[in-house]
Image (tube, rainbow, N blue to C red):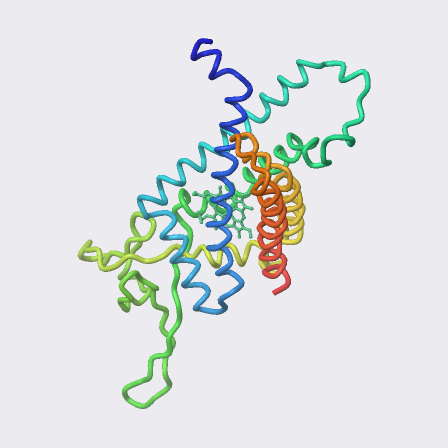
Length: 282
Ligand code: HEM
């Protein structure tokens, strides 16, 4: 058997589907852990925790490499999935003479392609809204906070807006400070970099699901909840199926993997959905 035949075999394709799918499950855990900052911590503390997390995700070299594997995995998993579905359909275009799918396959397993398509549509919408603003768009506001400065002469104290910076330098927001390269704070007249600020992604996410700030907040919240339903069903079958495609079949461990997969399918999408609902209701 030639290498080309082996690489083109549907078994190898399923192994790649499994590897990319299981990698994306680890991405989901990391992404969920970061996003939990949105509801676990409140006020300025939550804002700082989330913006620091988003900065770390975008700047740490190891995480950046993982990001590229994530993009590749999403594209590969989706297109390979479409191709395998097409090949299966082509192999039996009329369907079986006697077809009773419910007898030997669970409901989600028969709908993997359609669920995967819904998830892909969600990811494209999601990346257009958040990833674009986090990584590409330049004019996203930086994280600032307000302090009350006492008047040394004993008069009325004043409010001052400061940039939240990496080394906690006190940089007042004023015409003397300009932003370059998305987050670098420069003294305008001397053209000297004085500190690095954070993109305020926390406010971007909070405002996105806030009905007072975004007319489409309800529609987006429902889209996220619906898509997390699709993700849950996809994982309900996909998680354990990935291990099976990798040839991991054991009398004792396989039932445990099935149980873990179902827990994962409920908890992870459930928490993502909960985050959006809580932000919307807040
Ligand atoms: C509560 C729900 C969610 C919120 C608030 C959220 C928020 C964000 C934000 C702010 C970013 C850009 C900053 C960053 O990279 O961390 C991002 C990136 C991303 N999100 Fe989400 N997300 C949610 C759910 C999801 C889900 C369920 C998926 C996948 C099914 C997903 C897939 C992605 C991907 C692939 C990226 C790009 C990551 C990278 O560049 O490495 N997100 N998300």
